[in-house]
Image (cartoon, rainbow, N blue to C red; front, side):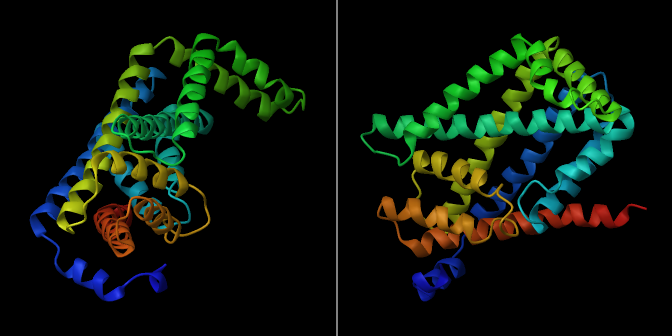
Length: 291
């Protein structure tokens, strides 16, 4: 990727960053952590699990640190599960809550990307892969309705697991089914958490748009609304540390399609990632303070 760009233009763009936009972008990203903690606490309460916000906030920042320094960007989920399992009384329940949180976040990502592609189509701009985004949104909505409206469906899906006749597997399958039923009985909690997920993803898109302004990169809003969610989804594949290389390839692909310079794509990707990694060091310090 670096061999394919004008390194001099890349360096000039980075040197010319506007500090005001960069600081504003960092504040916006930090705000997403507070919203994510509120969403997580809401999901835990739906399962009748109480954990103080201070503990969840610390865990969220520590998980952010691990997400940035381990393969894939879901390594921090292990931290969040370990931190809430004692209060939940079950690793299975803690894992289920994190899984639901992840699914809501992924759904919000796809919806934001689909909305960006739709706005682009209204403006007469074709976004690559737009039909797949709309299809994923529709299928996701149908699947969510089925699981929430008919929690017994989860029981049927778990029948092969129970057929193994292993007590520890039966116990975990039972806990999972009970958790789905509790979520069904708390629709307000799920809707609130989903709304929080949408706000988080919109704010993350805003973070990249603000960073683009700081780098003088002409990134249209509708392009950012598609590019950022798609790159975040691709980064979940555990094939590189923090998505390096994968993310830059996605940015470069979309920038080329819209006639934008590739050096701007790589600059935006690397600088924004460096900012997030620097911010995540707060979580590293909090982790070091643990016994």
